[in-house]
Image (cartoon, rainbow, N blue to C red; front, side, top):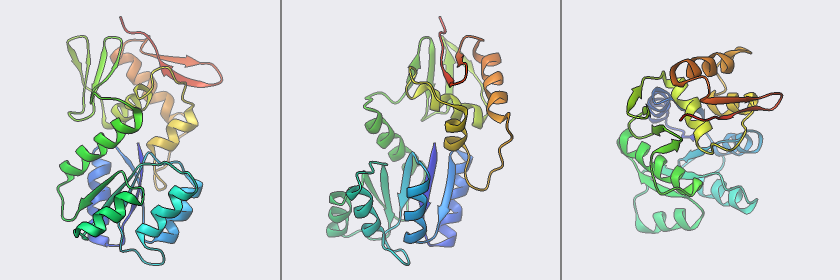
Length: 220
């Protein structure tokens, strides 16, 4: 998943970016509201982590304008403002969750998983495709009862495909969802990851729809 982090505090922003990248997320980090507004108009994100006290355009104004143009990108507010009126204003303004600083990375990750499940209309945390099961919380994958060990990037790519197993996802879409602004992507990077996943999961695990992209296949 590709995330937009909107945070003007260098220490907090750097720590969050590194922590989330270590969990396999692509993270674009901007420091003010105007930069965030531009990023949201030009790039598709799976989630926004939004501070409220921002330069140039405050977070609540940014959120309100995002919802006014019917952009339903999930937003989790991350802020030091812990007063009840602030929480109410953030949630009523369109945020999917509200997290008060300081917080543990594990709690943020759990809240992100909840928002992701809600967005996808799922009750279960784990994703299932045939006999293949992926648990985002544990970062573990099984084929039947056998656990399969994947790299962080392989796991992220497989998770993107399993979010909706019947949907075809193009190479360009996968690149956009898995890599941030400052990450260089070779033209065959996605194909290499797909090849490795097929080797580990089985050749039929991921189908190549010629000229269109990839989708989940069948694992008996």
